Amino acid sequence: MLCVPDRRALVLGSRQHGDLVALDRIDERGIELVHRRSGGGIVMVDPADAVWIDVIVPRRDVRFGGDIRSDMMHMGEVWRQALLAVGADPAVMTLHGPHMTNDAWGDLICFAGSGPGEVMVDGHKLVGISQRRTNEWLRFQCQMHLVDPTDLILDLLRERPQGEPQRPALVSSVFDRPLSGVDLAEAIADVIG
Image (cartoon, rainbow, N blue to C red; front, top):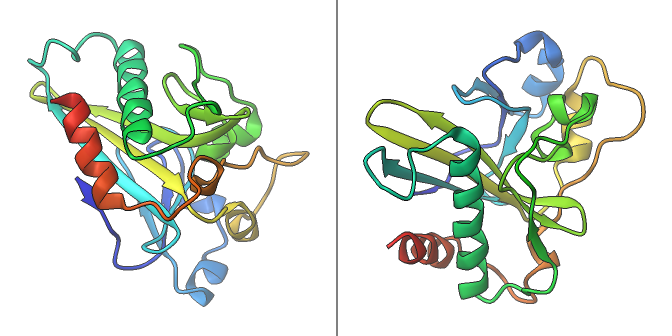
């Protein structure tokens, strides 16, 4: 499902609270503040600057429905194959291993950490993946950035950890032409079959 928001939104993970951000600055910039039910850190969704695709599969699908980690690894491989199918440079993409790699920044901002199966470019996250599970289905919420949202997110935070966060890999790091979200969503569907 290719998702295109109607405006920019700062999306908090299921364990995060609105007191992380300066509400007056969010209002000044016309950004909506929302919560998602899946875990992870802050994500900026933007109709022009990101590609957001949700993948929903039934729990009875034999390729999924195992444990959370193996399902994340499998979804990452689906993304890698779909990216290759639409022309991504295969030499630079890897999958993050089966364990989380987070520091204080990674706990706070999604793209500053790395989770199982997320697609990486030179140690930077290209595709962020979160997962929500019910008895009937698995929903993978996935996003890539065309423009780095890190500075905007930092400006909206009330407090910041020490140091600087890891920044995301951008779509331009694996494509030498514009990326069509429609083509990518179709490629993901083809890979899943």
